[in-house]
Amino acid sequence: MSEAQSKLMSQTIVLNCKDCGRALEGNPMPYCPSCSHREKEANYFACCLLMPEGLVRKWLLAHIRFEITDDDMLEQIAKDFHVSMTLAAIRLFQLGVFTR
Image (cartoon, rainbow, N blue to C red):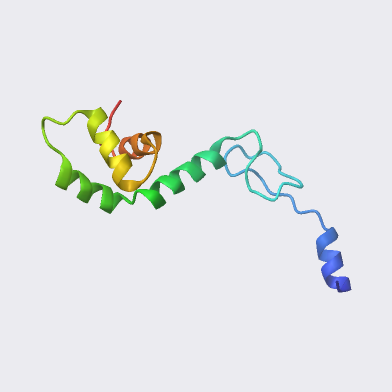
């Protein structure tokens, strides 16, 4: 390691949490360990990745029927997208399909 790299590595960089503003000295991520926002962002990312809005809306148009129950729809969409029923429910709530 060069002297410049060593000097840079020894410097302390202080960031502030993007959500609560607390100093995060020594924390490599811009979130407090006590904030749950990082986990929420990760969950949202996973939902978007595994169940993209466009594909979900196309699926709904192709599969939704008036006689279908929420449980039946949830089970089928989870199976078709290869995700858990919990993730499917969260994504449908995010997209406004489920309101409760």
